[in-house]
Image: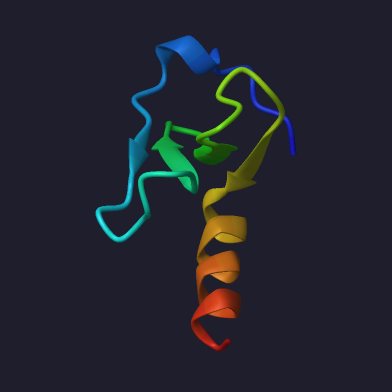
Length: 63
């Protein structure tokens, strides 16, 4: 899914459970959730609709 949200306009945050040497960051917008690699903040990112984000969290919670 692609959103028109500019990455620089998003407020990215990293989990307090993430190690300092790298993990992922998440940002939320009106359209949904965005995920990027902390080691490559200007690179590719994932974008989820709100329903897709809920399904993703449910999926990883089962692992």
